[in-house]
Length: 195
Image 1 (cartoon, rainbow, N blue to C red):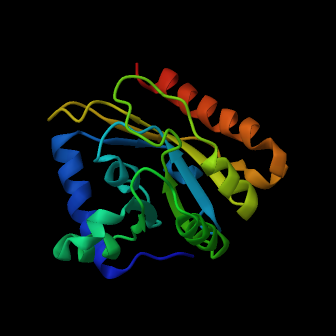
Image 2 (cartoon, rainbow, N blue to C red; image 1 turned 90 degrees about the vertical axis):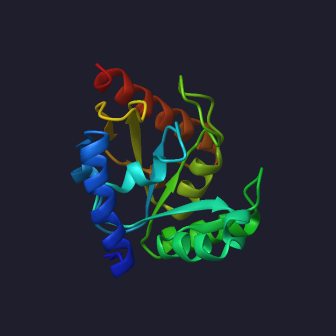
């Protein structure tokens, strides 16, 4: 099993306490995340806070791509590396970032991806096929997730995880079909749980 380091565990305790107090966070379906093996967590993207929100209620550490510029800031570089982030060039996912993501999935890690590629506060946007491509190539599980709420202080928020999709059930030429399945699952989570 991919275990979190001491720094990650310490940060998670602090973040959980803050989220429970400030956002009244409710976590639904965390037990649906496979406890081991390569897993890609695919979520809607509302805010810069989303990576923390996705990890607040689960035990496995999540690795996220982060803008390469963030790694040039000395203290921030140390912090985000300690939390498992890895660099990607602004505006595009490089071949190196894809290779690193595939290696992490093949090594049995959990990585977080926002298929829309950019933040959409109001509605679920169009997804890019990169997440599906990486999932199919690695044979990873894909767990769709939805972040519901507006990050308003003392207003309830939810993070909901769907049943895993086994990417190896899809052939290499079915990336669009898997992308549609992921986004449909996220949309359904939002529809059901935002009431």
